[in-house]
Amino acid sequence: MVRPKKIKTVNFEPDVIYFKPRAVPLSQLSEVELTIEELETLRLSDIKKLSQEDAALRMHIHQSTFQRTLAKARGKITDALVNGKAIKIQGGNYKMRGGKIK
Image (cartoon, rainbow, N blue to C red; front, side, top):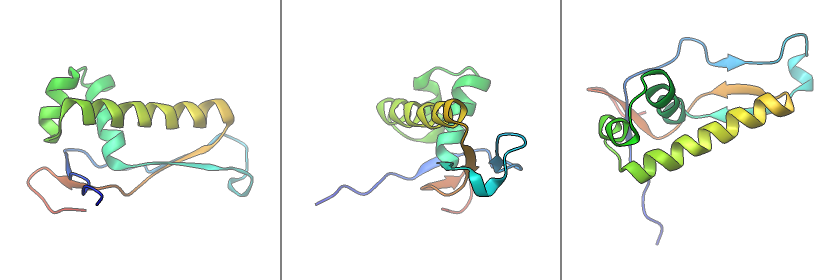
């Protein structure tokens, strides 16, 4: 039996949810999907400069889960930048701090 995924707590929802290479029509691009919780790991680690332990506490997850989610997010961003793909931010298994599960 598969273990259910833990809901991650997020304190940020982006206003902009789509990025693409300039001067390339969307119809010619592949997409990389970045989840809201993957974006949150990037924000806490790279913008807020929190340690993985502190960031994991904020998201109510284990440090190892934070590390795996961060590595996955960085891999997706790198793939998009190196291979000229669009980045779409949506979905995931998360809840807003003090809010509803999404």
